[in-house]
Image (cartoon, rainbow, N blue to C red; front, top):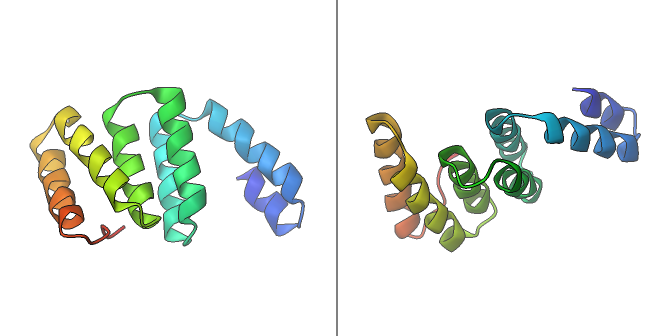
Amino acid sequence: MKAGILDALGRTEEADQAREQSLEAATVFEMHGYGRQLIAQKKPKEAVKVFEKNFEIHGDTWPTHVGLTRGYSADGQLDKALEHAKIALGQAKDDLNKANLKSIIETLESGKPIEQ
């Protein structure tokens, strides 16, 4: 990604601009994947911003709520994560994702963050 190269070169302002342009053109799943990369890089606050932007652009959909669940959980905002997990469960179309979300909800209800 162009932004990563610019970051490595210390050109952070240009990197931020390139990143913003990329996000504006990204699909719901590309944005979700990028947010998950940020969580893996231990950048939960940045991930939350990406997941919130995904919700802003792509609306009230299953992948945007799953992303918000993951982002808020990684950032320690377990109540918000639980709220979005419950919404995502209601929107999930298949049994595999429903089962995964039920497990996530149980974890969050026990007061623990989900494993990323």
